Length: 308
Image (cartoon, rainbow, N blue to C red):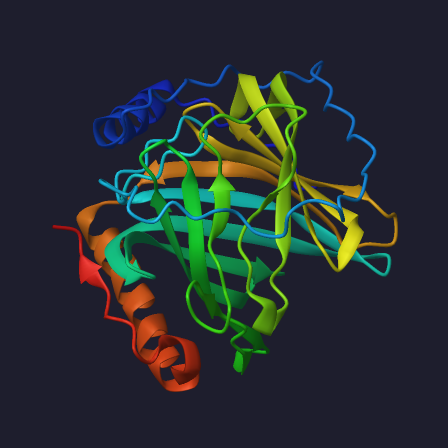
C-alpha cells in the first residue's frame, strides 16, 4: 500500500467540506488525525451466495428527483472528486495503482431515468489503463442505482476494448450501488446485471459503525461492503465507506491467489469551474466514442445534457 501522507490542513479541509455540504443534504464529517495505533479491521471470511436472487426489482416511476444524490454513505454532488492511491498485486507482482472518480455536471437518460454521469479513471504505474462514464440515480427511498457504464480499456496508450452495458439493452438490468439502509445480516444484492459482457457483480453489508484510518484521516462511522462477481465467488473485494463522505478504502478478502487490490483515500475536493469544464469535456469525448464503438447499446440513447 502507498505510504500514508499527513493531510491535516484545517483551513483547506474546512473550505472543501463547506463546499460539499452546500451541494448535499448530508453533513460531511471532519476526519480525525490518523493514528498509528488504529488497526485495520480484519477481513471476514467470504461465503458464496449462489442461492440469492440474481437481480433487483427496479422501482420504475419512483424517481421524483433522481439527480439529487444525498445518500448518507455516498453523497454525489456535481464537481466532487475523490482520489485513491495504493497497489495491485497479481502473480506476486505489485504495481502502483491510482483511481480518480469525479461527479460531472452532466446527466443522461437511461432506461427512462435521468442519471448523474460519473467519470472514473484508473491508472497503473502512472499510465491510464481504463476510463469510463458511469450512470447512477437515486430513488425516492434513497437507494442509489447503477444503470450502466461505458468503459474504455487501454494498453500502452492504445484502445483495446469497451465492455460496456446499459440497463434496458441486451438484457441488462440496473442494480444497487448503495442501499438507503445498509444492515449487517441482510441478503446480498445485485450491483447491476450486464450478461453480454459478464457484469454480474454483487454486494453485501459486512460491518457497520467501525472505526478506520486512511491517509486522509480517521472516521468513527464506517460501513464495509463486500463485493464479488457470480463467476468468481471466492474472489472478494471490500469497500469502506464513511458516513457523509463516501469511499475511503478498498481492500480484498477471499482467495489468496486472486488479484489483491488495496487503495486508500488520499484526496477529496471540489473542482473549480475550469476543472469541472475539463472533466465535462473528457466525459463527452468518451460518449462520442461510445456512439461509434458501441452502437449496439449506445446508439439510440439521448446525448448527455448539462445539469439544469
